[in-house]
Image (cartoon, rainbow, N blue to C red):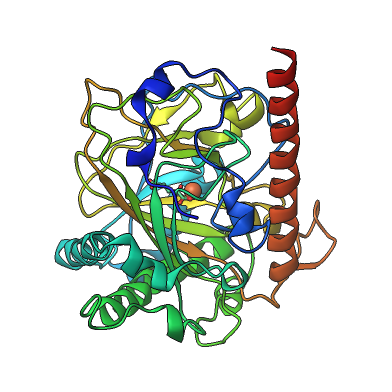
Length: 383
Ligand SMILES: O=C(O)CCC(=O)C(=O)O
Ligand SMILES: [Fe+2]
């Protein structure tokens, strides 16, 4: 059921024709439910047209706003102002002096590294459960922007209801304690940001945070450990990405990267003029140790009547003359409690629960992927 990147034969790739399939993309459906491919993260769809070129370089250099959370209580007004500018104009920004130490971030990366270093037959004991959106997957997430699986593996964790999916102490000592500690730390930072965003939008300070209550069993927040494989010396067809272009479904994502492990790119301010930003102006989001890269997701974009911007982003597969070793990243996705009502005040006034919002987003993604597959089939028949 799982596919390792090493099993993709290079000679075949050299002779690749658009529409050929070297990874059994349908295995994703075999894993459990058609929604597998969507729930792992990614987003918006319009026309799932041509493939983006993984080998193309980001085209525009932009300066991202740095939101400084130091002396949070005293500086709330100033932080709110900067954050609102970052969230409404760019949607992607760095958060600094957030209170999570570099040592804690390094420990979390080490924990992630050690988990992914386990053999696949051990990790598969914790295989993803689609209904809970938790567990381990490898080479299984297919985005409508590419139609092929991302070149990566990931482990998703939640606050509640995943007792059987936490690796045992024998398999991965201290994994659970460290992840839970890190999730709490991410949650504290997230609440600071969410309460400033609420005030900035003219709501009560706890307008968003009370709907992101991690003590309640229906919280949908997720910690996702990511490992993009070492691809040294390998070349991939242009529609293969470490992570294909997407927006996040959530409210707010905190992303941790390691210096030197580049590849994340963003198309800020929803500037994309084509489906998934293909051919548009992308900007590299360079890792800076200790800083958190933060992005606005689709759920809060709707909640704010589109004032806060959720942007396309992607992770480029490095070229042969670049560092092609592994990339590790860690994402903390904030998503409102399943029963929380997402309702705008001017544009999106129709109430929808967070649970239904996600279901609809997944359905749209699934249908877009089906359309893309049909189009590819058609092309290969007529070629
Ligand atoms: O690994 C990264 O840098 C980005 C991951 C991402 O965008 C996602 O998982 O939604
Ligand atoms: Fe993302």
